[in-house]
Amino acid sequence: MQTSTKQDGAEPEKSGWVGWIQIAVIIAVIVLAMIMTAVLSSGGGREPQAAPERAATPVQIIRPTQAAHQVEIALTGSVASPSDVTLTPQVGGRVIEVSEAVRAGAHFEPDEVLFRIDPRDYEVAVSRAQASLADARSALDQVEAEAEINRAEWRREYPNREITPLAAREPQLAAARARVASAQADLSQARLNLERTAISFPFRGRVIESRVEAGQLVSAGQNYGSVYDIARLEIIAPIAPADLERLTPAVGRLADLSVGESALNLQGEIVREGASLNARTRFIDLFIEPASPDALRPGQFVDVRVSGPDLEESVVTPASALAGLNQVRIVRDGRIEEIEVVVLDRVGDQVFLRPFDFGQGVIITPVPENALGRRANILTADGAAQ
Image (cartoon, rainbow, N blue to C red):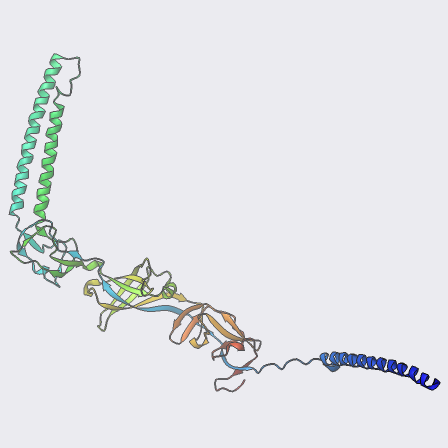
């Protein structure tokens, strides 16, 4: 019975030590895992290695050269007349004379009579107005004489009193003078109408069209054709705002003009710019005054070449050097950079830029966007590495 009791007491004691051993093992595993994690995260005690650098990008470069250059803009314009003048008589009547200069396409000189309206009715009107004026002046003379008599009688009867307006016949004098002025105006109008029976213009021009014939009865204010002033012909040449900026200031610059495929070459001068952009093309009109407009006709197309400012300080590169509107990529300290530049002019496959720091050179071959900041592998013209 005693032996049995001892065995029962030893069993619980053994179970207690087993539990503690299990706990110790678990703690040891946890500590070991923490140590391994720390070792792995620290690289096992070794120094961290940098990621390998990406391969260098192969590029070709040039060194821009300095060159003087004059901006030149080529445009296409057309001849236009600011406004056509209508063949519109100011008086009516029957046409009794038509000049050869009033035919379509004909030229005429300043004040040359193009056609004449029968003047007899207007000559009669002038005679009638002259008679009316003479009558009005006679009536005025009579009233003035009567007024002078009245003033003399008033001074004799009332030497110390001022004469009254009625006694001096001042109302009658005012009315008589008004009739004279009216008669003079009527005579001036009659003479002016008589002058208007001869239709002419104060400029040298050309007839676009005419519907006037001898014997025709014309009415005042009616349109019977149109003409234009040769001296006012101008060339309208649309220009892009960016090109206009390159010419600034544009007004006053000379232009070389050539008409179509003909041998006609003229000089011209830009006299003004359009006030607004064309709603459809978004261009601005340049108005050019030709030096010799006689050989031009409205509607003709004209090739225009305008010389702009001299670019005494500029550098020239191939157009392929531009990576955008105003960016180039360069090699500086062996790496690829992108910088902004000022484009002064473009001629064919060349661009003229304001001088800038281009480092080792300007890249003229395409490079990917992710190449910025990479090392550059500079190639020679034959594709070999330098």
